[in-house]
Structure formats: C-alpha cells, structure tokens
Length: 158
Image 1 (cartoon, rainbow, N blue to C red):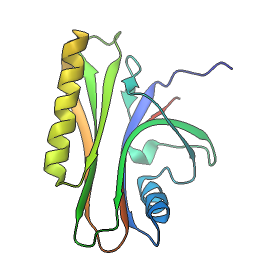
Image 2 (image 1 turned 90 degrees about the vertical axis):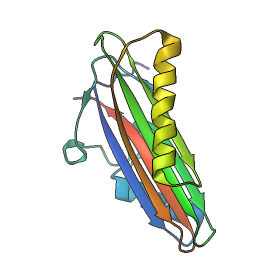
Image 3 (image 1 turned 120 degrees about the vertical axis):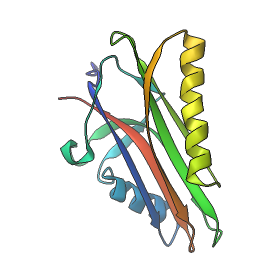
C-alpha cells in the first residue's frame, strides 16, 4: 500500500468530562475536531516543508484514517488538574524533517508546555539539526468527576 506523505499539519486540543474515561476522551476528541475519524498514532516526525494550517481549514473525511502525534491523559480525581501539550520543532532547512514531541501530566499547563518545548530542543540537539522555531499548543482541565485532555499535531495533505 502506498501512503501519501503529509504536506500540512494542524495543532488541535480538547478537554471534556464524561461518564467514563473513554467517554471523556471521545468528547475531548470531538472538541478538538477529530472525533469522527480513526486516529493513527504515529511517531513524532514532521515531514520536510510541511505547512501549518488552522483548525478551521482542516477538512478530514469522516471515518478516515488520520495520522497524528498526540498527548492525552485522563483522571477520576475530583479537583485534580490534568494537562496535555504538543510542540513542533521547525528546522531552519526546509529539506529536513521537523520534530513533534508530546507530553501529559497531572500538572499545570505551564509546566507541561515548558517540558514539551524543551523536549523539542533536545530532539534537535541530538539530531545535530538547527531549530528555526517551536510551535506548541496545550490544554489543562480541573477535574470535576471524570475528565480527559488531548493535544495533537494532525498531519494531512492537500
């Protein structure tokens, strides 16, 4: 099977409460705009020269197999905090691939986002690649009863 290499990506996020952990996760996916697709979790490489698009420009086929890298966490501890973040490192050289890192924790978003951004810096360092910029997105949620948070880099093509 020949698979087309994605040439665009979109950063999405969602958080939700649900009756069960899976229901909370499913509702977080819907909030992020990917809930009616089949997620194909992938390792964390951004194709060379991939273009970032906005969520409003992302049109995914319902039921489609969608490649993405994501961070997700859930909790059933009322009053607890959960956060998920994803960061994309863009290389200086458009011919080189970028790096996508994901992180989630029972911690404030600032902590989680600082960690995931440093993970990108580290990934570029050990690849001996020059980093042009980091783009990130994250979400935190104070658990009411049963909650999930989700942050992802969705890869797609025109």
